Image 1 (cartoon, rainbow, N blue to C red):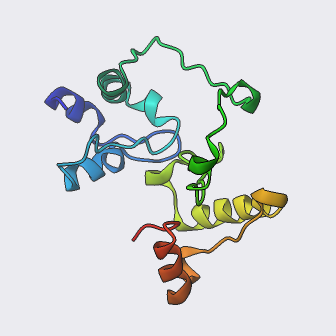
Image 2 (cartoon, rainbow, N blue to C red):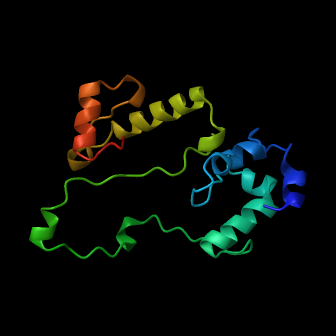
Amino acid sequence: MTKEIWDEYKDKKDDMGVSFKTCIVSGCQNVDSGIGCYAGSHSSYKAFPKFFDRVIEHYHKHGPSANHVSDMDAASLVCPPLPEDEAKMIKSTRIRVGRNLAEYPLGPGITKEQREEIMNKVVTACNTFEGDLAGSFYPLETMSAKDRNQLIADHFLFK
């Protein structure tokens, strides 16, 4: 980051109230991290464009005028069937939620209360899953040591 960018953004916040300092604190505390910065909300990209545009262009090779195309249609996936012996090796799959609900800030800018609201909404939605999508939810803050150890042993939870 240049001194010019720091001087311009150091005391600014995005539309959700997330400061530039919050967006970069991870990289300041973990200088060996791959990127070290995280947008605090969707508006961080617009509030701090000289910084985030440069990071995105360097890391993802997409310039500010590039468009990302999302195709969330599962029918568009090319998933050839695995041979039976390989399919037997699959214990589980995970759904990684890298972003959250539109009316909330992203990870670095979210409050504990907002995290709990999101968790409740996601749990409510997941409770509608049936068949092989059905499962159990284990809140980290109230999970028993026994459940935690078992989930780690089964590679469902990281230490």
